[in-house]
Length: 67
Image (tube, rainbow, N blue to C red; front, side, top):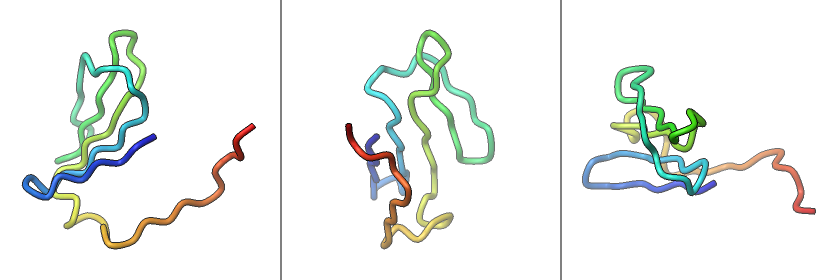
């Protein structure tokens, strides 16, 4: 998983997979889910991200340990 923030557009993209998106669905104002050709979720686009979240902090909790 990878996070990308684009200051010019104030958008935060959460990459859940390296597969390309083929379809998208806006599930709430400014929140778009991207799906691959098989319908699997591959990313989440959050517009106006700095209005929604404190982007100065990033906390990760309870991730599974690498094998």
